[in-house]
Each structure stands twice: as C-alpha cells, then as structure tokens.
Length: 635
Ligand SMILES: *Cc1c(COP(=O)(O)O)cnc(C)c1O
View (spheres, rainbow, N blue to C red):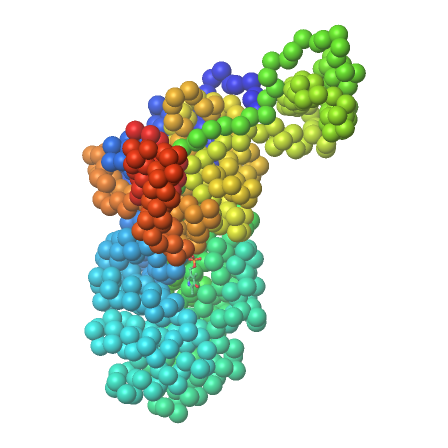
C-alpha cells in the first residue's frame, strides 16, 4: 500500500517517526546519509558498516549484534545514578548492584557484566545451581555480592558455603521455611557461618504484566507467620546474627514510580522490625523492576515507564532515608537486581528482507462487451466515488466482490473474470485509502483499511527463536530500517518471519503518535538488500526462544566501538547448523547421511541416476547439513 510520498524528507523526520530519541536512551541516532548510528563515549559507528564487516567474515543474516560499550555504559549509569542519589540525599551507606543471570544467561554476556561490573563490585543474583556455578566461575571481584534465590538443595547450599570460604559475599535468601534446616545443618557440619537473607511476600499491588510476583498469592517469599518461624528458629540456634539481608522483588517492568515507592515503604517496615527482633541487618535488597521504555511513551503503560533512571534511584534512596530516619535505624547497603534495564539496550537483531507481498491492483483492463454485470458494477464504483461517498463505495465494493466469489464457487464465472473483478476491487480500496487523510473523521468501517492494505515484508528471521516475547506476551520492540532514513518511507507494512506459522509476524509497532498496527518502510530496490533492526532485545529473548520449524540460534557478533570511530569484532559465534538443530531433537546426523547415501546408491543400481549424479546429490545433502538454518544467499 502506498501513500503519496513527501517530496522533502529529512533524517529528523525519521528520528521522530520511529521514536529513536524516545526509546533509544541516547545510544542511537541517524547520520546525514540516512544510516542508523550507534553512539557511545563520544564515538559513533554506522550499523551498515558493521554489517559490511560481517559479510566480509561470512556472518550471514540474521545476526544478533551485541554492542559491548552499551552494556558497559548501562552498568556505569546504574551505579553512577545510585551514587549521585546517595550523595544528594546524604544517605550514609552505599549501593551494591547485582545482575540476575536469568535475564540473559549467555556466557559472553555474563562474562562482560562480571568484567565491566568489577569496578563497581557489581555482583550476580542466581536462582539455580547452574546459575550459581556460572556466577562463581566468572566473578572477577570477590567483594561483589552473590544473592542466592530459588529452591536450594544440599548441593546448592554446599556450593554457597564454599564460596564464603573463598571470600565471596554469598547470601542465601530464604524463600521457604523448608530451606532453613538444610542451611543450619550444613553450616554446622562445615563450621561456616552463613550469610542469610529472607524474602518477604509484599502486599503492595503492582500494575503491569508481571504483577503476580507480589501480593498474597505470590509463589515466592515467606508469609509473616513463616518469617516469625524463621526468626525464632535462628534465635534457638543462636544464629540470628547471620540474618543480615531483607529481600523483596515487586515484579519486573514496573511502569509506575508511585508503586515502587509504596513497595519500598512496606519493605522498610519489615526491615525495621527485623532489626528490633535482634537480627544483624545490613542489606536491603529491592529486587528488579526498573523498567525499559520499549514504546518510548514515557507513560505508566505496560510497555513503558513514567520515570527516568535518575528518578528511580532518587526515589528509592529518599524513601529509604526518610523511613529509616523516622525509626532511627542505621542506613543499610542498598541492593537492586536490575536485569532488563541492564541488558536490553546492548543487543540488536538484524535481518534482511527477502520479499514483499503487496495488495495493490495491477493495471486495470479495459472493459469487454461480454463482461459480467458484477464486474461492470465494480467499475461503476470507481466512477461515482467522491470523498462524501467513501463508506458507500467501500460497502458496494465488498458486496460485489463477495457476489463474484460466490458465482465463481458455483462455476458461473471463470478464473479470468474473477481475477479482473478482484483487481478492480483492490483499486477501489486503494483509492478510498488515498482519500482518507483528507477527511476530518475516518468512518468507523474504514479504520482497518490501512491494515487490510498493508504490505507484508518477509524477514529472514524466526520470531519464535529470536523474539519469543512478541509471540508469548505481545511485547513491543522498536523495529526500524537501519539505512535509507534520509528518504521518506512510503509503504505501510507488517512483517512476517520465515517460519510457516501464521503467528510468526510482527504487527505492533511504535509510531510517531503512539502504537500502530503497521510500520512505515521503504520500497524494496531491485538487487539491493534492505536491512531492519529490532532493538532492545537483550533481555530474555535469547534463551526463551525455541526451535519452531527447526530454525536454530542465529549468528552472534560482539562489537566494541573505539574512540576514533573504528570498531572491533571482539567475538563471534556461528549460529546453529542444520545438523546441530536436528541433533537437539535427537536425530543422528551421521546416521541420516548413511541412510540417504543408501537411498542414493539404490537409485544408481536401479538406473534412475548415474554415479556422478549421486555424488552431486550427496554433496548438496552434506553441505545443507553443515549450513545455516536461515535463508542463505548464494555466493
Ligand atoms: C527476574 C528477577 C529480577 C529481574 O527483574 P528485572 O525487572 O528484569 O530487573 C530480579 N530479581 C528477581 C528475584 C527476579 O526473579
């Protein structure tokens, strides 16, 4: 579907249209030549140049691109923002961040966080033995915290106690009363004093998608009765001085700052009373929840947030200070577990467009004497169309078209006549659509016309593998072309992936004035690639993905930008081969090759192919097995 194009188009219009400044956290911009740029540390690089570098290294689309500098900068921003807020409020303790590994567990990401976080003693939150082992073997700064949540068996506890012996600051957060006896038993057996925390169930209600993490029915945390039991058991064991940390997690992606504030006040009350009970409290851990403004709307809507990082930190620090000062409690070390906000910005999914399907009429055929009355009716609609009669024309067009389809079904008109009619029908819709902008009010029946006429752009990626949250929870991610941004995007489109699943599509986008079902894109140019990027995909997307249609992991590239505007390919991981994904679902690629070879050999014996053809057939088979699961361009 096409709209008359604006003759003049500036890169600023692209920036506004795609909301780059609203969601980009200052990391993205557009160069005068229309290429999207990544910006950090007074340096900027055009994404298209990075893609060219990938091509030279045979890293085909789709590619998950990680910009190391952005991860580095996000960790710094978080720590700096808390430090400033603490200085500003006169809070008399400090901040210690931990990164919850579940948000992106990829070894390279966890490694980079350990590395960039070391100067802030940024630690890890772990929820399983596997994550615990990842944390223990990557942390560079032993003074950083390791916060152990989740169900802990003896082995988990043993790992944690030994980490304490090595000098790590490892807290066991008690989530259920059943964990305590195991911890007490083992710490006595090993003669190590554990560092303990308690996770409480909060009653403060949180809006947004992840609200069930709080409230009475939350599956996590201790009820007040259980909390008292834990305190009493520790007293009996003479171990109350081990209890030093209060943990709460209100939920992820909390859009409204008011709710964060009221949650903290509740947490402070628990902390204060634990101090009064005699626990040697030192840390208050407020969990995750710092939201990412995916839609760029800066609102308290689910995919947004109505606060900045600075406000988040200041609100937390001020609320803690006020509440603790009132009850004369010494200021604890502030811990947060920001996952999403730490990693979302640094990953970008890049893919090329393979093809476009548009819903435009082809040139109208001149009318024939023998034409069916319904086709003549359709032609007449074009003649009586005026701005005032658009709704009527729309209704008529649908009526005649549907009648035509009925006749076709009953064998009363032929295929060619039906095609002529369908083409006129599309022309009518197109002309109606082109006049809608001139109307003051769009008639209710015509609101969906934009979507009905939208092009389908076929992208070389699998939604289920690379963007699972779009499918699972209607998550919104910014999608934009990474070049040609100096030209008007004259098409309106939805994006389909290359799985053959009708759910494999993106039809929810950020537009200039709020969410939109279609995305403005440029027409494809013959023989030239058109690249799109999906942004803010660093959190959760990589490991929640699945092997739908056996599309595997994409290629992954980590890039570091240098001050002089150059960039280094620091790491690359080639995505799954077809043999890889087949073996994930228990096929045995070697056996498969042998069987296929036997089939081919039999065909030679039966005289259907010759030996040379057999060789070619096996070559294709083996090359496919070792190839990428996505659409590959021939060299
Ligand atoms: C998931 C989770 C987090 C991360 O939350 P974000 O909103 O991504 O920052 C933090 N803490 C706990 C206990 C979690 O389960």
